Image (cartoon, rainbow, N blue to C red; front, side, top):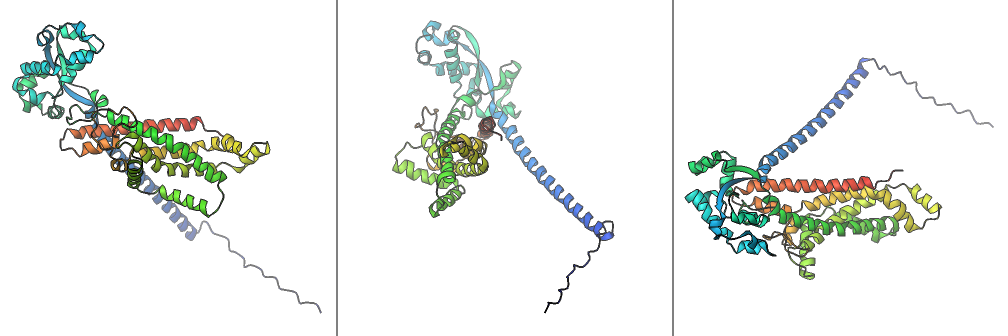
Length: 427
């Protein structure tokens, strides 16, 4: 007995969309309006960010550029009379600095300044003005036989008043110096060559800059190779089990740990257990390397995963060993992504303050560090210390130091970007 035929189920006929109808036109207008609102919000966000960035840069430049300028006063020094007729040949020996110091340049400067400016000398000229006289004699010993003008730095208070146009409070005798062309604003080269101090008229960032350079070198030499090798092992060689999963989770968590935790770790491990020198660039670099390494590992793994499997298969197909596949093919193609992660990690490390405060890198260092184990500080910590000073003259020094830090950061990033593009391989 044959089965009865099954009735075919036909879908109901779909009515044709009327794109010109009022309903569809209203829906289209609603979509376009939503798109315009989204574009407007995106433009507003970019504009607001640009306004904040412009405000930051303008405020930093307006305050910071004055930190690179210094008010100087020309004082006439009669060196033959002040030194008792010392000959220039006595300053040209094997140790000219010691020979100059034996002439008491500080005493000579005080006598000449007192004669030129009288009772207002202490309020007008910096107490470290004699250093300019010493440096001038070391650079040109023949000056000891001449009577000449030497440009000396003003006090921080007078410098600020002169820049603000309020120098008249220091008296008519001082203002008359400007009419005699003995008062000027000059480039403050000492800000780039001096170290920290208590006198804002003579402080500089060279010691902190050198400390930052040493610290970044240690951080890069440790974090980059160890981070890249760890990424290669985890992605190419590590077995897929619970232990490797735990390591991966731990690395991801370490990348989000607050930086001060790494400072506590560095305090316990490197200072208490290993007894390394406190406040040194070596300990600072080790601490920042711990903080930077997880970022490099994560970026390195993502870059290695982005290399297409066909590259590995082709290399193995022509007889390359697994290690040759990794180091001759995979790693060169992953370098751009690895360098991007390194740039992000090093930029974060350069601006860190909290972990370095924990290991004592806020020490007062009047001389630049000579080695990785010498007491030192870094630019972010130096900025933090100057911002906490009561003297208002440190405000422009703080802004100028921020500008130096930004230039240092941009130079470091530009170098890393150049190397990334230089070694980038396209396929």
